[in-house]
Length: 335
Image (cartoon, rainbow, N blue to C red):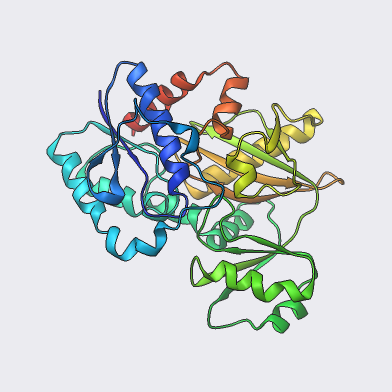
């Protein structure tokens, strides 16, 4: 097939998207497809995915390209026009965050009549909006940590502390890869945490901190794959721990009692279906020592970097990386 891989983009997760997209494009090329990689932050800018050196793409801190968003975001229209003109048969959406993951690109591709990987516009928007996701989880019996939503115009520090016990998690309502996230353990840390989160949007979530183990459930075609336990050496699965090699240990499948593992996998698939996701996604959980678990969020466009989790889960059931990419493309064509 004639496939375009959209990567890069204008979000803080740009570096992750570049690494993801290059890996995807190489796998699809290996599978015999006619593949183009396009950095849509700059319109229809081609990326040499075969010659790219992926070793240094993901830096220790998130990209600051979001500062240029007003000037660059409109370039997505040039990219979509190119896809139409070149008669691209299917788009592999390898973007993270921003218009790539919040449903805006999906809506444009729907209007253009071009099939694409991942969830549709509505599910993508809901998945990116952490507050609305949690409302839907509650309505569908998926356990999630207690939280409150604050806009930039409301919620003084004292009011937040009066309502919640420490520690708290403070994070932007619409970001991924733990960008802008802080764990507040002392009252004096709250102001800086809020200021950091508000750098990435006008709405912030203040959520109960759940001590325990970090787990994730990848979902492929509506079916939950084996659970992965994430054990960062720093104790906090932040941006650096996610994307810098050697910073995190992964246990696949997670060492859990069979009955508990089945319940968490069921909750992962439940969260995926509750939001109306399609194709593939990844659902993150925290597990307490008493066996209670809480869904944190659904990632509708999870990464496909060398350290990413969906490929690790697929490998555990005998699905290699190139086969996984082919399955995701086929799922997009079935819609």
